[in-house]
Image (cartoon, rainbow, N blue to C red):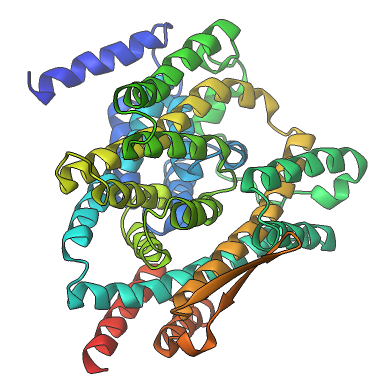
Length: 473
């Protein structure tokens, strides 16, 4: 049976799974029109989560006027609170608001698809040709630019989140906890959420979210749809929640359980399925915060790849469309490529890539489709906003941890680790410093911060300069 004949059947099944009949939309936005817009969003989804959210805001809020500023920010706040890629979840949420489950599934899947294809191709090329001087030269420059991009993210998020000395202290405490004390990332985020929730009751002025100007263009389509009477699919329902949760939990966990039962706990595929399933649950705070945790686990605990290779993968994800979290696909590919068992290494890598993406993104659909109706009832909730503000401040410290960790491993060839009295220290060998990497990183930082050059031009220029250095040194 060909793909064209399967698509109508799949769409019909998805529509039926929502139980409620697809009545005509009061907002008047045809599904075919929305499909074109989601294809456009997917094609323009470069630049990490900040750039992707900006693209959706421009198209959906400013240009199409399908959703208002307040509702857009409310949906974004919820997605930021969730574990996983907030930009992809935001697309899913808005697609769900417009056209129910099918709309959310299409919006979220299209957001991921271009990046999945690109990272798959690049992972295969990287595994096969990494040792070629030309490939090594290009990634040498990209690593330095990626470090600069992470620093820029710390500054950008910090300016938005650290509005007072208490928030600065919360960020500093998170950095000390994760970098020096090796406190688990989920504990830091949960603790920040509790602090924000309690602080919202005791000192709410410390946890005020940044103000945003309202959209002056009148009431957009979704706001008009929900203003007077909430449509059936956006109303909380315990029965529907249980059905939806059961369906998506099965899609997520049944393949992982089957792999573990068939291949055993020591199989690389079992390890990948279990590890990234855990990440789907605990990795709060956006892509950069996720990567801080995954990079250290994949490099130091599982030894699936090196810190340098993790930077290469992050460079791939930064320069291709789709969520930055697609770097996990690269991690999964290399892990199975180097431990393929009886399989061909490339086949093992491809299968591991698919598994990684599956257990990373299926939970995102679970969070949105089960939680969104309840979140629609919480718009303007002061305590929820306070918890989000505290988590965002804490994430600044976590991302700074990622930047410092990358810097230590990027700029020095040899890095030791010392543990004493519950404190962990990274000790680089000063004689192993790579001056060229330091200079490239400084140049990329100046371009980003001083001259406001776009991320993609900076990455391209750094790759070119890195290649030039390799061939003239």
